[in-house]
Amino acid sequence: MTPDPQREIRSRTRRSLITGAVAALAGGAAWEWLSTRREDDGIQWPLRLALRANEQLTRDYFKPARLARTFPPGAVESGRVNGDIGIKDPVPADWSLKVAVASDDGNREFQLSLADIQALPKVEQITELKCIEGWTRVLRWGGARFRDFVARHAPDRVDFDEGNDYVGMETPDAKYYVGLEMASAMHPQTLLAYEMNGKPLTGQHGAPLRLVIPLKYGIKNLKRIGKISFAFTRPPDFWGEQGYDWYAGF
Ligand SMILES: Nc1nc2c(c(=O)[nH]1)N[C@H]1C(S)=C(S)[C@@H](COP(=O)(O)O)O[C@H]1N2
Ligand SMILES: [Mo]
Image (cartoon, rainbow, N blue to C red):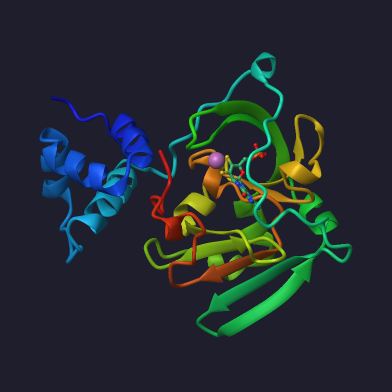
């Protein structure tokens, strides 16, 4: 049996943790492949097993240069709104993007406007938003590459330490939050988006600024970013805390 990691991960993410753990054990070749590659360092068996296996499988296959599929303009679909945690109230009138940068020289915090993000090189990309509930949408996003944002506003974080550097994002009310490893945040298709399908983002799709990270499931594509934090430890993650795969990539 040839392991098909993408399929493994997708189906495993949808399954319960227990089922996932059993599948990981029963997965034969896939599991053997995995265990020859990585030490399972003191994982709490069996619950952690599914999570860690899933995550390590993704990580082993993840290469910074790997790109999510892009689509021609004719493939663009209309949006489908899903998830309103942290965006039920109107966008705060005094919205600004808060940035917190932990660094070896101490922490610093500052605020940016939407104009500051729009001043970065604009990228348009047509990618697929995949919800773990089982639907997808091909959408055209306009925004700035996260890595251009880092280069301009947190240049000391450009040379990140894989495995030790993370980014956390949260809504202005902090009710929805996601954690990302730096390599995924810095991926060239990861955008701070302010347009969807050629128009400014609507409130339900995350105005004024949202995360678009096509190498991860919808749950990580946080709408209405209020704060971005650069950290040295794994940031909290809303769905990760509910038992979903923290990495949530494919
Ligand atoms: N603030 C916030 N962002 C969120 C969510 C949410 O509940 N609150 N749901 C996520 C989920 S599960 C999905 S699938 C996508 C859906 O984005 P869309 O409504 O633009 O299609 O938003 C993600 N970002
Ligand atoms: Mo979702």
